[in-house]
Length: 334
Image (cartoon, rainbow, N blue to C red):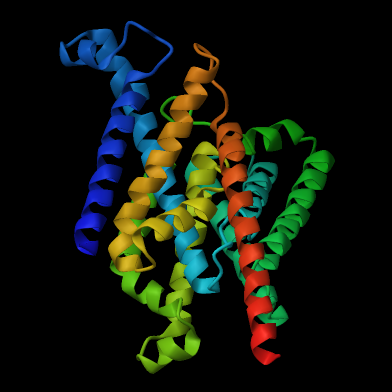
């Protein structure tokens, strides 16, 4: 029965994904361009679809799937449901690396910018992970709050550097999450590589989520798998940030929502996670385009509003659950 229920959930997510993908291809500022006109061979529709709507939709799907997987891997490594590239300073470090590449190299290729972002994102994540491991904080809800403060410090460094180099406008553009970038999505396709690796290593990422001692007892090279996971997180965060800018809360709320529906088995639910994340961002992207049609609102604003509400719900639930656990423990001791 549980297997049948799981299959129905998967079919529902898949149907929603197909519908939202078709809607994403259908919605645009040019009302005369539609799927129907594209199917009937209209030249203008074919040009718009091939050069704008199809690349944009693929970018939405890949960026959402990548950030969702990156968030789940980070949560497995840290064994904390509130960890994500957004709440661990990874995204802010990627922005700092992108700004430094612009300051020293000027307008250069996206791949060079991605290398700078990747290095800074990886170093920033490693530093935050090392600090958290040393502090050994028991309350899980405090870790993302520390991560947000850590990210704020990195963002302050970026702001100070932009003031010194008179690149505030450039930094503001970097921190603007949008898919309204015609034909500038090549770097998002890099996400395909870490996604394939994540699927292949899904079981190992699940095992390290059970703890270092447990993983080592099973013969798993814990440090190697953790290192690979951090590289995947940094690569996804850097490539998506350079291509489309910051997409907040995806790596935080999508893994939590997916595991609450499909369970904690990463091997079984990783494809469902990708589809669920894609559905969420496709919905927000369509809403951003329709809200002030024919103009477009930045998707980072839409995701921040929706994701912020969901994050607060999970945060309050975590704090309430922690209080109940402490209260039950106190009663048992008494």
